[in-house]
Image (cartoon, rainbow, N blue to C red; front, side):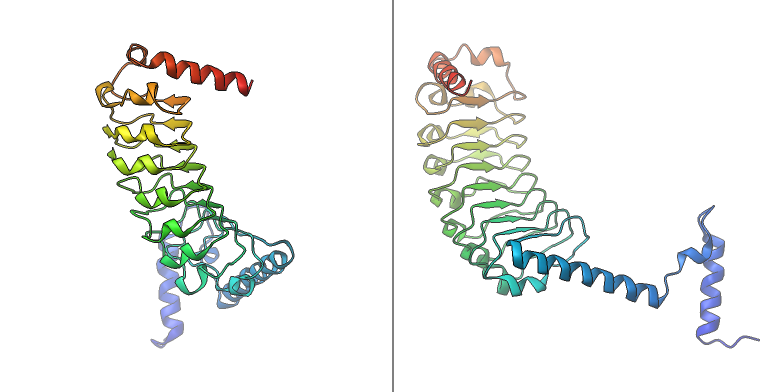
Length: 281
């Protein structure tokens, strides 16, 4: 009779698996031996080392769709030469404060489709960062020091949980493109008037109010407000008559587009729109 040690427990487990096996799948294939697990780990480490070695030469580290749950600590060897990091489509839920701010030459950081809930203040030490892409995470706010990213040109935060347009963005003098689509923004406050962006995407939020100050944005040319909760009466007419905006996208709100054409200032907006269209034709 078999003792109640490890062999007995293994046999009992095997019996349960045989009873619960998926039809057409041999029950033995459900087991993964310690040797196989060790081999998989070595292969993973080997692949990571290969990417690190390549990045040392190219300045680009890209490791997407690998199921990573942590920011690779191996990158601490590359803090002085990486220009691009792309860790999109993983399961990373936090960035290491002691490491993330040390990439002194980093220009592009992409962590789309991860599980980030908060960004460390140290991220804002990346003085050469020009592109930051954090689409489809779980961010509710940005660090108070976010305005220190003085070189930032493109910011993508689509598909997060932001409840407002972060006022820190108004401190970024070189910001060109901001994507805040698919968040939970309900209103645009007066602080927006200091935003330096050329393009602002606010599609698919819950916006029902917009400050007239949006007309004061000195460089704003493209404003996307599709699929929000705007009544026509809540859309500042100064956007049409007294702004730099030459492309206004407002389809999918609580009014008919033909009503927009009846507003005072629409002719001035169409003059800007037509001139811009000819310029790029």
